[in-house]
Amino acid sequence: MSTSTFKINFTGGIIPPKEIMPILKIAHKNGARDVSFGLRQQLLIEVSSEDKYHLAEELDTNGIEYEMDADKYPNIISSYPAEDVFITRGWLTEAIYKEILQGFDYKPTLKINISDNRQSFTPLLTGNINWMASDEDNYWNLFIRFPKTNTIYLWKVMVASKNLVEYSKLLEDTILSNKDKFYDKESADGDELMAAIQQQKTFDTKPSAEAINLPTFMLPYYEGLNRYADDKYWLGIYRRDEKFSIKLLYDICKLSVETHKNEICSTPWKSLIIKDIRQSDRILWNNIMGKYQINVRHAANELNFQVEDNCKDGRELKNFLIKHLHADDIRTFGICLGIKTRRKSEIFSSILVRRKPLIRIGKFEFFHLYDILCAKDFNPNERTAYVFSSNNYRWLLPEQLRRAIVSYYTFVNNQVNLERKAKMLKASGENQKQSTAEYVYKCPRCSYRYDETFGESEFNIPPGTPFTDLPEGFICPVCEFPKSNFEKEKNIH
Ligand code: FE
Image 1: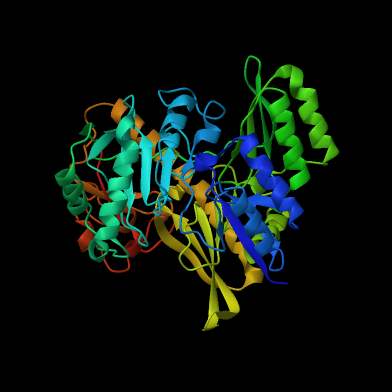
Image 2: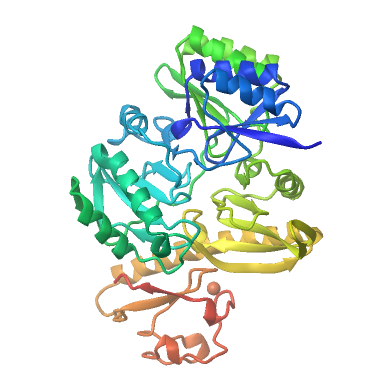
C-alpha cells in the first residue's frame, strides 16, 4: 500500500500541547493512528494515499503548515530538550533558546542546528548552519557545513545571540545566491563566504578561538521518570518502532495542560521528553504509562541507534543488530551506532553501518553489502576517519560490528594509557627527552602517535626519522593499521 508522509516542523523540538492537539485530532480523523518524530525533531504523520487529500485539505483549512512527501524547509533543531535535564546550567537558559527560536521570522531552507556546547545529546554539526554556544556569555561559535558537502568551516568570529537569526538569514541568502561557489562544492571556501558576509553588514561579533574542542560523546539514559531538581521530574519515552499512538499523545497533552502546562520536547533520538513534572503529579504520569503499556526500561545498547527517518529497512537492520548485541551482552556505552541506507543522508554516529547495493537499476536496488565506518576519535560530531571493514554480507555484520565496538574500547584504553604515560614522564623530571616535533601522526584506530623525535624502537626506526620517510609497509605497532590511514595533527607539548 502506498503511503504519504506529512511533516510538520516544531522549531527546536519544542512542542506546545495546545499546538499539537488540533493536529493530532485532524490526523486521527483522517486515518492515522500513530505518529513519529524525525531526526530533526519534526513531527511525521504517515497516511494512506486515499487519506492524504483529506488530511491536506483539513490542515490547510486550519492554517497548519506542513509539507507532504517533501522536506524543502528542514526543521531547526536544538538542544533545548536536554537543557536543565542533562546539561548543567550555563548562560544558555531555556528562556534564551526560546527568544532565539521564536525570533525566526523566515522559513530556512538550509539546515540550522542550535546547540549548547556542553552536551552531545543532540548532534552539533549535522546542519549547514551549526550554532554552538561558546564559553563566553551570549556568543555563539559557528560551523558551516556547505550544503551537500562534508566541508566544514569554523567561522572566525563568534556572533551575539541577538544577531543569530539575522546572521543565519544572511548566510542562507549569500550561499544560495552564489551556488557556483558554496553549494554542492567540496572545494567551497569558508574565508570567501566570511568576506562576503562581512562586506554586507556589521554585526556584534568577537574573534573566535583558532580551534574548538567538541565535547566528548556521552549519551545520557533518556527514558523513564527521573528527578532533576528539588521538585522537578522529567519523563522520557522511547518507542522501539518509533511510533507514538495518537491517543497516548493526546492524553499526554491533556495532562500537561491540566497540571503544570508542561512542554513536550521531541529529541533527535526520535523520543519524547516531558520536563517540569511536579512530584505530586507523578502518579498521574505513571498512570498514563500504565494505561498505554509504555515500557521505559530499554537496554542502553538499543537507545544509542540513529536510523534515517521513515526507513523500514533501517529499522529492521537495527532490530537485527540489537538482537545480537543483546544476545552477546555487548557494552556500547560511549558509542552511537548509525545506519545509513540512503546516499546523501547525514547520520550522527561513532560507528556507522552503511548499506550499499551491489546492483542499482534506476531507483531499484538489488543485493546489498555493508561497510562499517568509524568517526574520528569515535566522536559522532566528527567526520568519518576510516573504513573499519567493507563489503560484508548481512550475516557477517553482527560479528564485524562487535569487533568495531571492541576497537572503540581499545582506542579509549590506549588514549588513557598514553595520557597517563605522558603525565608520568612529565612528573619524573627534566632529564626526559622532550618532543620537538611540530606535528605527530596518529593512528585513528587505536590513538597511537608517531613522533619523529623518538622514532619507533619496536621497528628499529631511529629518532629523527620524519613520518614521510617511514617505510611503505610501516604499520601501527599497537594495532597494525597501515600508515596510509594515519592522521597528521598538531603536537601539543
Ligand atoms: Fe593503531
